[in-house]
Image (cartoon, rainbow, N blue to C red; front, side, top):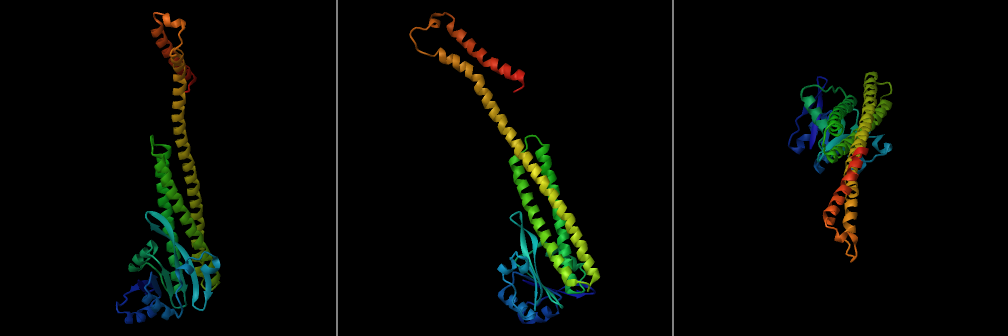
Length: 320
């Protein structure tokens, strides 16, 4: 799918692309931003004719080395940045390839992302400044950081719910709590990775801007300061998750120890009566107690006393 945007009164505005493939190149040539979402071979060919170069392959986009993610060639500046996405209820990262040229910005990605949906919605309300491609790119990265900040706030709320569940609720399902903590830790790690990647991308843009656009440079620096603040928040979330994970595992161990303690005490309590019953269960011909008239009830009393005595002892010691 292709989407095209242009600058209208200094703000981003979406262009209507014709369904007729032969008429699209005119609109794409006028576009300030071309957004390609899992493009078909025909759509890839149209973009490649405009930029006079091949679009990157998926394997190239996913490269993690800095030399592969940030570079400049005859096509323009290339930035491959990680964005947060969701898959089956879990956060994942998805790479977006940016190609920055003097007259346009081209983005290439494999799936729809919440950040870009929000950008389109804001563009419909005239809220995205877009005087040139570089400003638009910085705006997209700023929007990305704002969304990551919102996601961190959501993670913190979820973490507080789990904290109440683990530390305050009686008979809480601790295994469920551990599962929720694992998901929060995974999401927090993905967010931190996206923040670090954005920090590198902004640093690369700052080196490219040099002193040509002081206002845009200051925007980049301000966004990088925001990232530093968010990084400290992710560190706090990591520490809180580890604390709650240790607490939940500790409570599970306490519960298991209580069960083992009950079995151990039960074994000790029933051991003396078992000993008495074993003695008087022997089948020797000459046993003095066999002739006692009250031997049987006496043996029963001895068994009861032998069982109660350890219980009272444990109770006084506070072991029960």
